[in-house]
Image (cartoon, rainbow, N blue to C red; front, side):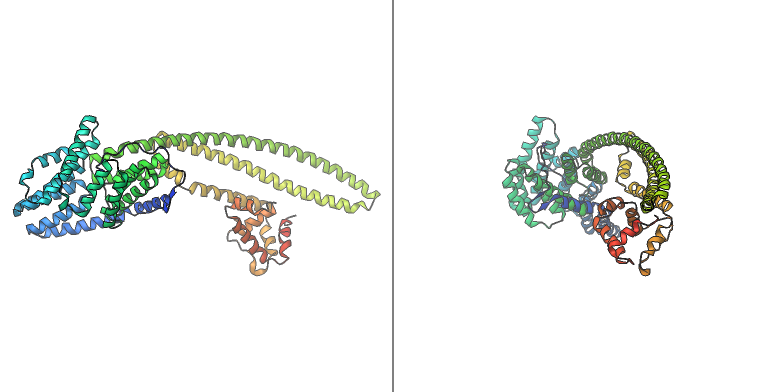
Amino acid sequence: MKKTINISALLFLFFPLWMMAGDINLETEYKLLDDAIAKSDVYVQEREDRIQKSKAILEMTSDVKVQYEICRRLYDEYHPYVNDSAIYYIDRCITLAEKMGDRTHAEECRLLLAYQCSESGMYHEAMDILQGIHPEHISEPWNLKSYYSTLAHLYNELGYYCKVPRLQREYYARGDAYRHLIDTTICSSDEALQIKEMECFAAGDARGALHYSDLRLKQVKEGSHEYAIVAFYRHLDYRLLGDSVQTRYWVTQSALSDVKNAVMDQGAMWELANMLMDDGDMERAYRYIRFAWQCANKFNTLKRNNQISPVMTAISDNYETSLKRANHLMLILTIVSSLLAALFLGILFYSNSQRKKLAKARNELSDSNQRLEQLNLQLSDLNSQMRETNLKLNESNRVKDEYVGRFIHLCSFYIDRLEEMRKRVNKMVKNKDLNELYKFTADSELRDNNLKDLYEMFDSTFLHLFPNFVNDFNALLKPECRISLPDKETLNTDIRIFALIRLGIEDSSRIAEFLHYSVNTIYNYRAKIKNGALCDRDSFESQVKAIGM
């Protein structure tokens, strides 16, 4: 796809917070485009298969007319696919037409060659070809129409990329003059409508341009290469109208059709990437501009590479800025983690001090109870209750001490990991290895490994504190509902939920947060286990909390 019209470089200053307008959901359209890009190799292979079949037939035939038809077919395949090959085969068509003495087709192919050169930025070559053709000697009216169309296209291209205002105005004036010479009565319906659409656009009449675009849209098959061209011009009309959602919708439709047709001349894709960059969607803009860059390298024209390079540079700069912010945030998180570790050390020291005071008070109370036991038998029951309370307190202290120690170790472990990650990200930023950084930050393996380590540490600590918990827990269940663990060192989700309940974490939302399940899933697990209890459902969890006491 190419745009051959002078459009304003000023994009929208504000983009709506929502992504929908009427029945258009841009996020859905972007998802369709993402899926098509993922399957782009399949579409490219389909075009390659057609090309290889035509080349095989070409090698097998010696008939000049057949050779001409196949070379023309190969030009049509390569025209939006590989520029050098398209030029080669249309040039070969000229030679074959001259060999047959077919002046009309020779003229037609020279005009196609001139158009291909102007499309790919070879303006000097296109001008040389056109200057070698004299309009008064052109034999057929449709070739004369193509001659003026090609000149109009060439001067519009020169005007669009010219940086000298005076020359730019002159080029556009020449393009308009040649377009007015085109006899639309011999044009195809789509060509005539396109000329009228371009005239309305050049005059700033967006509504008029869209009227002719609507008529063109009815004549093309959705998803075809012709549909991509109509959609591209349509996005320009909506941009002129100031409708940002429709602009993005139609440029996305154009890019989607280009991808599915294995078109390497990706004008729509880099336009869309530019818009997404302005919208702040840097990740998607970066993916699209990289794909457009790969297509441009395949098509192999300096013009398209020059168009894409500034967009790639802008996106890369924004990426670098984002990485610096991420690095700064990482530093803040490291400092916060260190402060939290210091806070937990203080809590541990205070807890230990309180535990010693409590142990001393318990010993004094035990001595008093022994003396009072001889004086008042009625107090024996109370003393028994106090001893039971002390045993529970000892057990709580033991569990707390174990988990605090493990938690401090875990904090230290994750501080080291954060530091390693900071160094790694810093190294990738320093080396500007954006590809590696993207893969590193997009991969969920680090999160999964951290969760695995957390659960392993939880299981190990819990089984260390309550080595007979699994057996005692199964004793509360019916034989057919008892749980067998393949690895005695690792708990499954059922056991892990009730292990948390044993530790005093009874709220399903807190359990769901720890185990990374939904609250409904936790409710279902708890209900399933309680349905298999030997005792009453309502007292089952109370008995679980008494295990190991």
